[in-house]
Image 1 (cartoon, one colour):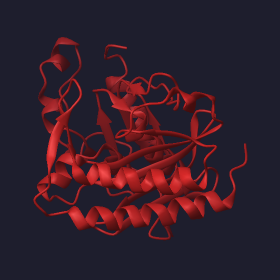
Image 2 (cartoon, helix red, strand yellow; image 1 turned 90 degrees about the vertical axis):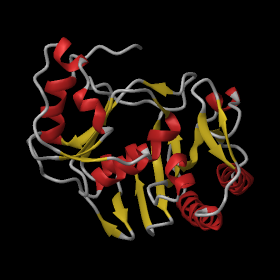
Image 3 (cartoon, one colour; image 1 turned 120 degrees about the vertical axis):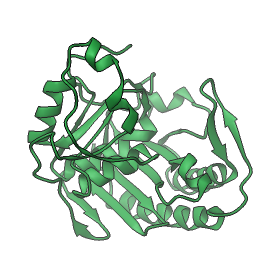
Length: 269
C-alpha cells in the first residue's frame, strides 16, 4: 500500500517536537517507577512523550493503528492496514541516569514491515530517517553501514558480559576474538549506530519488542545493512505477539560471519 508523503512530513515534525519535550525532562529529578513482570523502568517523561505522539499521530490519522510500549495494547491494530509502532523513549534507563544514549522511535508499519521510520536522539541532535526504497539519512545526509567483514577487531554494540557467558563453551562455540564493544542501553540506538557506520554490528540474545526494532529495522536496511534474529529469521511486525527472541545486525559480509558463529544457538521461542 502506498504511503502518502504527508505521512512522512507529519512523522518527522511530530518526532522532533517529542524530542524537544523529552529534553525538558532530561537531567531533572524525574518521577520513575517499575512496570511489568520484568520490572522495566518507566518515567514521567516516557508517558508525556507517548501522550504527545499519540495525540498528534492518531489525531491526524485516526484510521491508523497504534502500538506503543507505554499504551495498553488494543487488538484493533491487527485489522488496520497502517499502524504506528512507537517507543516514546527507547533507552529509559540511560535517560533517567542523564546519559545521552536514548531515542524517540517511531515507524509506520504496512503489512508487517516498516515503510517510514524516524529515530531521534535530541540530546546529541542525531535525527535518523528512512523511507522504504528511499534510502536512510542522518541529519539529512545519506548513510550506509560499514564494509567490515571480520568479527575480530569489529565494533559491536552489545551487552559486554554476554561474550563471557559459559554457555558459549557448553554449546561448543569458540571464544570470541578481541572486539571493541559499545554498550548502549537503547536497542534502537545501537542499530542506528550500525546504520551510520559508527558500529559494525549489533547482537542481542534476549527478547525484544516491535517498538524496540521496527523503526531501526527500516533505517539499517535502507543503509544497506541486514537485520534478522540471531539465526537468520526476518522480522514481521504488528502481529498478535509483539516479541522477538534475538537480534543480529551488520553489513552483509559481517552478518554472514556472525550468523555462522551464533546461528546454531538455541533460544526459547
